[in-house]
Amino acid sequence: MKKIGGLFSASLLVLLFFSSCESNLKDVQKINLSEFSPSGDADSITLKYTDSGRIKAVLIASKMLDFATVKYPFTEFPKGINVTLYDQKAKRTFIRSDYAIQFKGTDIIDLQGNVKINTEDNQVLETQQLYFDQKNEWFFTEGKFKFTAPKGISNGEGIDFNKDFTIMNTQKFSGEVEQSE
Image (cartoon, rainbow, N blue to C red; front, side, top):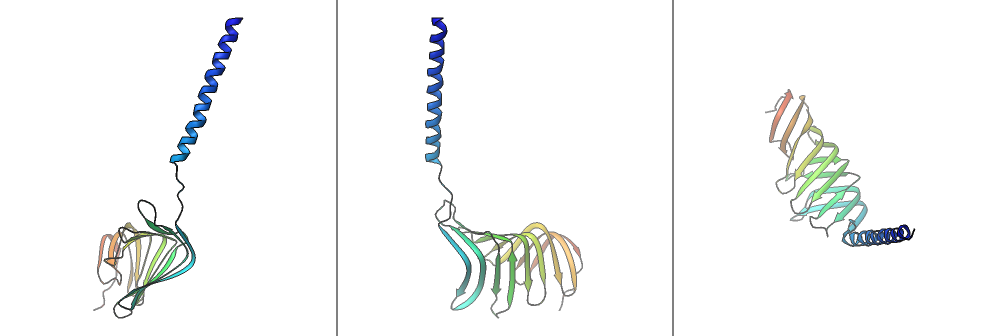
């Protein structure tokens, strides 16, 4: 009987030892776990981008989260954006999406969910995801798209183009669009 009692107390001691180590291990793991939260948070914003005193773009969003202090900084627009781009002659291009994220080191904006681009001359591109290279004012996607122009509708998969649709490159394309001269 004494052996059983000794074995029981030794087992209890080992169990307590391991459970206390597990508790300490969880505490140590929590120290290394940092909370991922934005350094800036804004509601109902309007941002105007200017160059040499001229407005180049206006961005409107109901929510903006700025993650400027993380290793790879970015700005997130979880409730979508509406953007108006202006060219040299003040001709406008309108962009909207359900979600957007801008990667600060790359000048790339990732537009997601019901992405729609309209020009003043009634050209419309619709897709689910589209990237915008701000520096080169160039859009691109590998996804499916629908392009509507006054003289036709086309569909495809994979496209890149400039902001006013004067230069377009497609990968898989079907439909007909007449070009105006």
